[in-house]
Length: 298
Image (cartoon, rainbow, N blue to C red; front, side, top):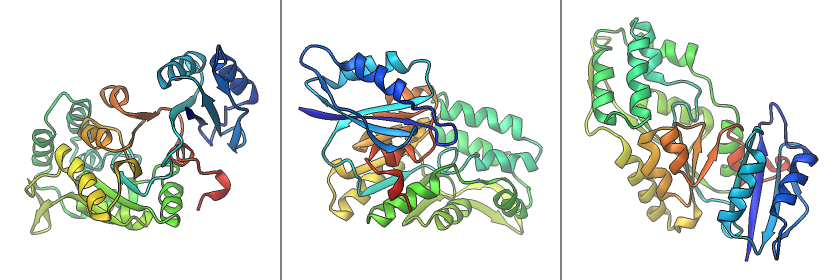
């Protein structure tokens, strides 16, 4: 049985040298195991190595030991359906570099307090809906103009986000943004990236101010999973054709339901449970995991 090992480093600081690859291959070659020469997807950034007669568990264990002190991400997977037809992605700290609600709280002078609750919820230590209601209530009375300031002054796309979405779209994949954040931002981020659809929560405004309330039903953990399932069925896809990416506890069900669920610079509870993880690279790692070459990026 053949499987593929993909090794990826951050494009901003390429670290995948031929020597590192040699050490990985040497660690995998034992007994009946067969390991191919590297197929470079991008020089010093990413490569594929074909494995024969070695279990995924054994390969993962050996690779982790070799790479434990290296800024390199690795994924072992089957050869079939590597290129996905559906991507469902979280927004805050995944497609963008900040947590929008925390940035809004900064304008209210409450960022430190709100950020603590955000961190607790993302680590799975607090119910997401309770955490959202608590944080939004703390914004009561804030001028709604602050939403535009957060968008123009604070939000930056995550490195690799544009290439990920544009490349998958160019190969006819559907890309959906689904967030526990607010539609004010999901609409703008989805538009900036050219995503197919977006979903988020409604922040209630009245007389030019944030009321401290959020529309119901609240989009959270179960809704994210349901969005993935619904899109897959609507598009007539198999589970093997699906990918999801996120960083927080409310992404866990979605990541587990996807064929390839990727924990992106994620909280420990998420990184440990996900099928794949990116701890070092940017979002183009998700393209390399699918077997795209750098020359194919849009």
